[in-house]
Image (cartoon, rainbow, N blue to C red):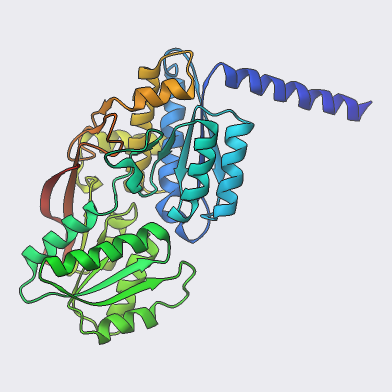
Length: 386
């Protein structure tokens, strides 16, 4: 009798949950919430959770709650595939989000397309399919993006270098990171630089010394690394331990602001599309207060990506209206403009053919030993996305 009662309660709870979901916007996310690359993804997911919680506390969107379902894939493609299938087939999500390594992209994209549900990349790197002419079902809010990042970074290197550039390159052995460094190798030659070493580093690398040794022995005087933060910073640290004194530039992932202060390396630059929290904008205070109220364990400066994703999702849901379908939401997302309130150099603007943004803006920072503080090296540089 007790077993039957428990089964009845479980069934009732499942039915109630299903009914609640039918009366809400349902969003599912598969992300690297644990594992080596989690530091680049988990803080953004936490910030998105806080944003959605705050949105619901204020009444939701169009009078409906937003249900956010989070699934951990530990950056493993098989887990990401299973998560996507569950979110699409069982939870009937209106929107699927990927917040994981690019090695998870192909299977998740395949599942989303099979289900006819739009897929948003948030805190995970923007794939080329969101650039013009964009895939109708794929969208991206993340700051970093293939090809444009290397163009901006290497343009800075060319303008800054005081002698001919002998370029070392470092990537993680995942599809998009490796592809970007391949692109940077070709681009560097066009800019008059000499690429001298290109290291493709496996994700579970316990010792970066062998890769750093190759870069140092090739006599590189600059390093460009475009990979998850763990690869970027450990390659640099290994180089410094070997006595390398060159300049380095890397992507300003969520960890960058705290890491610049920790490393205190005046020859280490980071390039990014997000304003660091040291700029102390009103939106930064708003985010910091929300993270504190939401008991988020990560520093506020690691949460901007998730907050931006929340802003865009809210705007898309408002535009799609209620009742909503994946098709209606996808249509709304294909014509959207969101003010980032200074978190970026301009708005996130999506059109029918461009699901990245119309213009991409970059800033460059470094730690200034003379001031014992992080300094802005170059203000917003704009690139039209075509």
